[in-house]
Image (cartoon, rainbow, N blue to C red; front, side, top):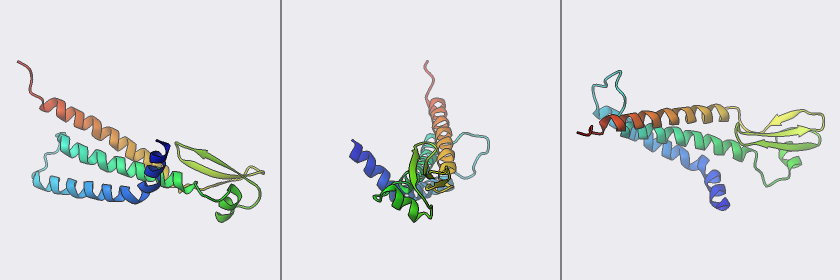
Length: 147
């Protein structure tokens, strides 16, 4: 199981842009067919699912990019030296928010994860949650009432 998780995180930065792009194209084609767009109506279940796939792909791709930016085969001193940090280092890692820092004995930290990673993760998770709620509401409203 750990190998599958590692492979998913390792390949996600390369695969998630394709998933995002495919869902975006499908969403554009779907919206073009639904003219005129009625403002104030909830999108249907399929539209919400496409938005959820896009948001999930963006969040997972950014997460895996951030996690992999602090994962190197090199030892921590070589990894930190490659980023330009001088001195003795201890590498600290956080899963969420994503962070990998080279911390010197003097307490100075150099962040290894790019600054855009955490905002994309949190925005993607919020959009994913909103799309799931909207899709659920659309499915509940579409269901015929008993009686």
